[in-house]
Picture 1 (tube, rainbow, N blue to C red):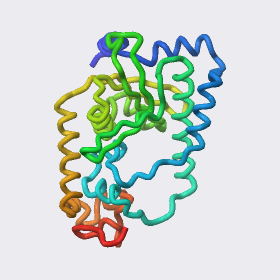
Picture 2 (cartoon, rainbow, N blue to C red):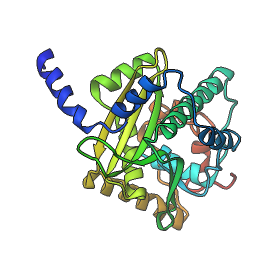
Picture 3 (tube, one colour):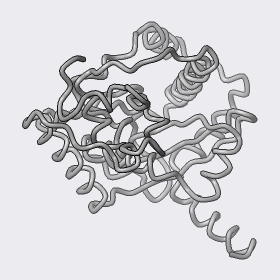
Picture 4 (cartoon, one colour):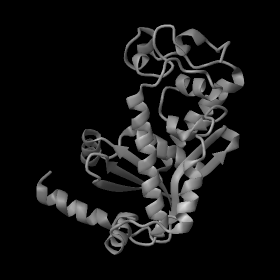
Length: 264
């Protein structure tokens, strides 16, 4: 694709954007990013709230992963090992990226709520949306939308901007479409190296949402029957996901659980 054609396409896509135009206008008026006192109080409450217990429901953050992995997480099977301090700091940094964006977007009136939970009990499913609001500009003006925020390192950010959000993120968004009923979703990526950001707006794709429902139905049948899905072929020979999954590794919970875990 020529540079001129890409620039022309980028200009046309600006009509889709929901967050970026209003956020940049707000920053021009509020360069120090001062947060509204009521928003600050709400964010303080969020900051002091422990992470929810992940077992007992299927989560959007796990969507698209191996079915067996999702089932073990649902059952609350413990993962082995200790999280390295550096990885803990990466997780904590990600939380602060979210809090900063949420606080500023709430203050700017671009979103109406943060950390909004949507559920579908019939599928044992829940998701937490980083934000919810009503689009005020662009072709989706007047539409309810959900917001997904991602902090990325420089390499991953550049790859996402070049090739669009990865399939794992898209599967997470499909799951959220299913549970929320929204037609529009915003994915916002920030480059943690230099604070560049990029916005994508996705309209509900019914085929993808149907796939998300099918995955959840498969997971629920496994729980109802008391029988886990089989290990991935690569995991059976100790390659690929076997070495990166939190339940993987030699003697790990996935390998030791057989058709159903006897210990959580």
